[in-house]
Image (cartoon, rainbow, N blue to C red; front, side, top):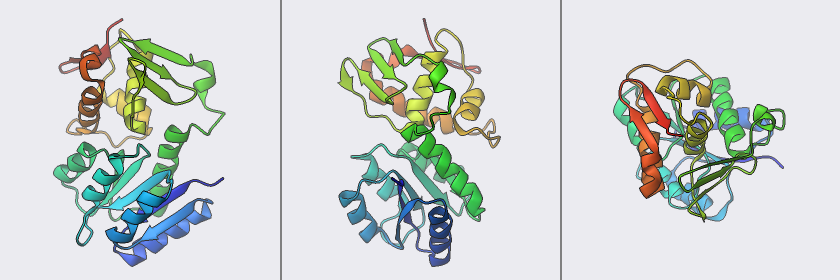
Length: 230
């Protein structure tokens, strides 16, 4: 069964091109040029990933992302024509998992889609997960790395793929400091990290909000990184 991907972009040529490349990878694509129909699709369809242009007429991509996060945890990739840090932080703050700046190479976007789906669905049996423990526990947090489930005080904890990956890295390295750069490379597996990049910081903040009283388990080691004490 092919994964279902939503594309929302008012630039028809870009939306059509992205659709073509994704269909060539055997994904099922739901393409819209405006927010209205896209929001209806989000309500009625079980999607696996969304690609949202920031600059849409009427309801923008940020608002659509926020709507998705009210009910769903599947990955969201934002498309932005700007290099402004504020746009990126806004998207991440609202729950986006990645962003791609226009103009972009379609194959780069496809690679990002595959990486996000791989983390979200865990459909690749050849990954090294088989060598790692299935269960990770700490301070009322229980994580099953096989089923991609997380519980907080025996209640289901709804995490985005990026939040799940960050928490998993910290739990697997309990007692050790993990730098933001190291975490970034482990999650996205590429080299576009810079010292001014606030991506990890934003996701850590979201993760702490969801963990509530257990958020104290994640310690900030200023100037170094983050860790969970043993």
